[in-house]
Image: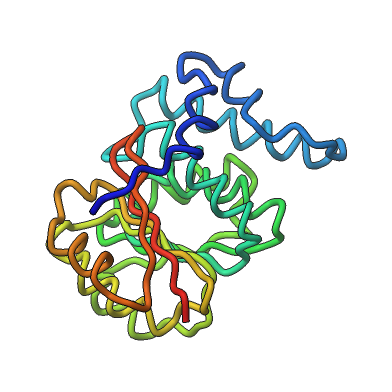
Amino acid sequence: MKRSLSILGVLLCTASVSSSQSLRAGFYRWERGADEEQAESKILGVLDRMVKSHETYLSVPVQDGQALRLLTEATGARDVVEIGTSTGYSGLWLCLALQRTKGRLTTFEIDHQRAARAHEHFREAGVENRVTIVEGDAHEQLVKLKGPIDLAFIDADKGGYVDYLNKLLPLLRPGGLILAHNVDMVPDYVRVVTTNGDLETIFYTAGGGLAVTLKKR
Protein backbone atom coordinates (compact mmCIF):
# COMPACT_ATOMS: atom_id res chain seq x y z
CA MET A 1 0.00 0.00 0.00
CA LYS A 2 1.30 3.46 -0.86
CA ARG A 3 2.53 5.48 2.09
CA SER A 4 2.75 9.25 2.11
CA LEU A 5 5.97 10.84 3.34
CA SER A 6 4.08 13.02 5.79
CA ILE A 7 7.02 14.32 7.85
CA LEU A 8 8.84 15.50 4.74
CA GLY A 9 5.61 17.03 3.51
CA VAL A 10 5.20 19.06 6.68
CA LEU A 11 8.75 20.35 6.39
CA LEU A 12 8.43 21.28 2.75
CA CYS A 13 5.01 22.89 2.87
CA THR A 14 6.40 25.54 5.21
CA ALA A 15 8.33 27.04 2.30
CA SER A 16 6.32 29.35 0.04
CA VAL A 17 6.87 28.97 -3.69
CA SER A 18 5.83 32.51 -4.56
CA SER A 19 9.02 34.49 -4.02
CA SER A 20 12.78 34.25 -4.11
CA GLN A 21 12.84 35.34 -0.46
CA SER A 22 10.98 32.18 0.55
CA LEU A 23 13.41 30.00 -1.37
CA ARG A 24 16.31 31.63 0.41
CA ALA A 25 14.66 31.14 3.77
CA GLY A 26 14.13 27.43 3.16
CA PHE A 27 14.63 25.14 6.09
CA TYR A 28 18.44 25.05 6.36
CA ARG A 29 19.06 27.39 9.26
CA TRP A 30 22.27 26.12 10.77
CA GLU A 31 25.27 28.40 10.79
CA ARG A 32 27.21 28.62 7.55
CA GLY A 33 30.26 30.51 6.42
CA ALA A 34 30.07 33.53 4.14
CA ASP A 35 31.35 31.55 1.15
CA GLU A 36 28.65 28.91 1.57
CA GLU A 37 25.98 31.56 1.93
CA GLN A 38 27.17 33.28 -1.22
CA ALA A 39 27.31 30.03 -3.20
CA GLU A 40 23.80 29.07 -2.08
CA SER A 41 22.42 32.51 -2.93
CA LYS A 42 23.95 32.29 -6.39
CA ILE A 43 22.28 28.93 -7.12
CA LEU A 44 18.95 30.07 -5.71
CA GLY A 45 19.16 33.21 -7.82
CA VAL A 46 19.49 31.14 -10.98
CA LEU A 47 16.61 28.91 -9.91
CA ASP A 48 14.42 31.97 -9.35
CA ARG A 49 15.35 33.47 -12.71
CA MET A 50 14.69 30.19 -14.53
CA VAL A 51 11.16 30.09 -13.15
CA LYS A 52 10.46 33.73 -13.97
CA SER A 53 11.93 33.35 -17.48
CA HIS A 54 10.05 30.09 -18.15
CA GLU A 55 13.29 28.14 -18.63
CA THR A 56 12.09 25.12 -16.67
CA TYR A 57 10.96 22.81 -19.49
CA LEU A 58 9.41 19.63 -18.00
CA SER A 59 11.10 20.42 -14.70
CA VAL A 60 10.10 19.47 -11.18
CA PRO A 61 7.98 21.88 -9.12
CA VAL A 62 9.67 23.78 -6.30
CA GLN A 63 8.32 21.37 -3.65
CA ASP A 64 10.07 18.46 -5.33
CA GLY A 65 13.24 20.47 -5.82
CA GLN A 66 13.30 21.13 -2.09
CA ALA A 67 12.75 17.42 -1.44
CA LEU A 68 15.69 16.55 -3.71
CA ARG A 69 17.91 18.92 -1.80
CA LEU A 70 16.74 17.75 1.61
CA LEU A 71 17.18 14.05 0.87
CA THR A 72 20.55 14.49 -0.83
CA GLU A 73 21.97 16.62 1.96
CA ALA A 74 20.43 14.64 4.82
CA THR A 75 21.95 11.39 3.52
CA GLY A 76 25.34 12.99 2.89
CA ALA A 77 25.23 11.85 -0.73
CA ARG A 78 28.38 12.65 -2.70
CA ASP A 79 28.01 10.59 -5.88
CA VAL A 80 24.65 11.51 -7.41
CA VAL A 81 23.15 10.48 -10.76
CA GLU A 82 20.25 12.16 -12.56
CA ILE A 83 18.35 10.69 -15.51
CA GLY A 84 16.76 13.57 -17.41
CA THR A 85 18.71 16.82 -17.11
CA SER A 86 16.29 18.98 -19.11
CA THR A 87 17.47 22.58 -18.64
CA GLY A 88 19.17 21.89 -15.31
CA TYR A 89 16.51 23.00 -12.82
CA SER A 90 16.38 19.82 -10.74
CA GLY A 91 20.14 19.45 -11.08
CA LEU A 92 20.62 22.83 -9.44
CA TRP A 93 18.49 21.74 -6.48
CA LEU A 94 20.74 18.69 -6.17
CA CYS A 95 23.79 20.95 -6.39
CA LEU A 96 22.55 22.98 -3.42
CA ALA A 97 23.09 19.83 -1.37
CA LEU A 98 26.27 18.79 -3.15
CA GLN A 99 27.85 22.12 -2.24
CA ARG A 100 27.53 20.98 1.38
CA THR A 101 28.50 17.33 0.89
CA LYS A 102 31.35 18.19 -1.51
CA GLY A 103 29.85 15.79 -4.02
CA ARG A 104 29.36 15.54 -7.76
CA LEU A 105 26.41 15.14 -10.12
CA THR A 106 26.40 13.04 -13.27
CA THR A 107 23.32 13.90 -15.29
CA PHE A 108 22.04 12.34 -18.53
CA GLU A 109 20.16 14.20 -21.27
CA ILE A 110 19.17 12.96 -24.72
CA ASP A 111 18.34 16.38 -26.22
CA HIS A 112 21.35 18.46 -27.25
CA GLN A 113 19.63 21.85 -26.98
CA ARG A 114 18.36 21.14 -23.48
CA ALA A 115 21.78 19.86 -22.44
CA ALA A 116 23.36 23.06 -23.76
CA ARG A 117 20.90 25.22 -21.81
CA ALA A 118 21.57 23.17 -18.68
CA HIS A 119 25.30 23.73 -19.11
CA GLU A 120 24.69 27.49 -19.29
CA HIS A 121 22.60 27.38 -16.12
CA PHE A 122 25.17 25.32 -14.24
CA ARG A 123 27.89 27.75 -15.32
CA GLU A 124 25.79 30.76 -14.31
CA ALA A 125 25.20 29.19 -10.89
CA GLY A 126 28.91 28.50 -10.43
CA VAL A 127 28.57 24.71 -10.17
CA GLU A 128 29.81 23.63 -13.61
CA ASN A 129 32.89 22.01 -12.04
CA ARG A 130 30.60 19.88 -9.88
CA VAL A 131 28.49 18.56 -12.78
CA THR A 132 29.10 16.18 -15.67
CA ILE A 133 26.45 16.24 -18.41
CA VAL A 134 26.32 13.06 -20.48
CA GLU A 135 24.49 13.53 -23.78
CA GLY A 136 22.74 10.60 -25.42
CA ASP A 137 20.28 7.86 -24.62
CA ALA A 138 20.63 7.08 -20.92
CA HIS A 139 19.44 3.51 -21.51
CA GLU A 140 22.69 3.02 -23.46
CA GLN A 141 24.96 5.42 -21.59
CA LEU A 142 24.21 4.07 -18.10
CA VAL A 143 26.08 0.83 -18.78
CA LYS A 144 29.29 2.89 -18.89
CA LEU A 145 28.72 4.33 -15.44
CA LYS A 146 30.76 3.01 -12.53
CA GLY A 147 29.55 2.76 -8.95
CA PRO A 148 29.08 2.99 -6.14
CA ILE A 149 26.62 5.85 -6.21
CA ASP A 150 24.79 7.29 -3.22
CA LEU A 151 21.61 8.65 -4.77
CA ALA A 152 19.88 8.62 -8.15
CA PHE A 153 17.01 10.71 -9.48
CA ILE A 154 14.87 9.47 -12.38
CA ASP A 155 12.80 11.98 -14.35
CA ALA A 156 12.83 10.96 -18.01
CA ASP A 157 10.79 8.79 -20.39
CA LYS A 158 8.17 7.11 -18.25
CA GLY A 159 8.25 3.86 -20.18
CA GLY A 160 11.94 3.52 -19.33
CA TYR A 161 11.69 3.83 -15.54
CA VAL A 162 11.95 0.11 -14.80
CA ASP A 163 14.95 -0.26 -17.11
CA TYR A 164 16.65 2.71 -15.45
CA LEU A 165 15.94 1.17 -12.05
CA ASN A 166 17.41 -2.17 -13.08
CA LYS A 167 20.57 -0.49 -14.38
CA LEU A 168 20.98 1.78 -11.35
CA LEU A 169 20.37 -0.72 -8.55
CA PRO A 170 23.66 -2.65 -9.01
CA LEU A 171 25.52 0.68 -8.85
CA LEU A 172 23.71 1.97 -5.79
CA ARG A 173 25.36 1.37 -2.43
CA PRO A 174 23.36 -0.30 0.33
CA GLY A 175 21.63 2.51 2.19
CA GLY A 176 21.48 4.61 -0.96
CA LEU A 177 18.33 6.17 -2.41
CA ILE A 178 16.60 6.12 -5.77
CA LEU A 179 14.11 8.96 -6.30
CA ALA A 180 11.59 8.81 -9.13
CA HIS A 181 9.37 11.66 -10.31
CA ASN A 182 5.75 11.56 -11.59
CA VAL A 183 5.27 8.05 -10.24
CA ASP A 184 1.50 8.23 -10.71
CA MET A 185 2.30 7.83 -14.43
CA VAL A 186 4.45 4.70 -14.01
CA PRO A 187 2.46 1.93 -12.26
CA ASP A 188 4.93 -0.74 -13.40
CA TYR A 189 7.73 1.08 -11.60
CA VAL A 190 5.64 1.48 -8.46
CA ARG A 191 4.85 -2.22 -8.46
CA VAL A 192 8.52 -3.17 -8.73
CA VAL A 193 9.77 -0.88 -5.95
CA THR A 194 6.98 -1.88 -3.58
CA THR A 195 7.28 -5.65 -4.05
CA ASN A 196 11.07 -6.10 -4.03
CA GLY A 197 12.11 -7.25 -0.57
CA ASP A 198 15.49 -5.55 -0.88
CA LEU A 199 13.83 -2.16 -1.25
CA GLU A 200 11.74 0.10 0.98
CA THR A 201 9.65 2.79 -0.73
CA ILE A 202 7.61 5.73 0.50
CA PHE A 203 5.79 8.41 -1.51
CA TYR A 204 5.93 12.18 -1.24
CA THR A 205 2.85 13.65 -2.92
CA ALA A 206 3.01 17.39 -2.22
CA GLY A 207 4.68 18.09 -5.56
CA GLY A 208 4.55 16.06 -8.75
CA GLY A 209 4.64 12.69 -7.03
CA LEU A 210 8.02 11.45 -5.81
CA ALA A 211 8.87 7.85 -4.92
CA VAL A 212 11.71 7.57 -2.39
CA THR A 213 13.26 4.12 -2.48
CA LEU A 214 15.89 2.86 -0.05
CA LYS A 215 18.21 0.02 -1.08
CA LYS A 216 18.34 -1.97 2.16
CA ARG A 217 21.09 -4.38 1.16
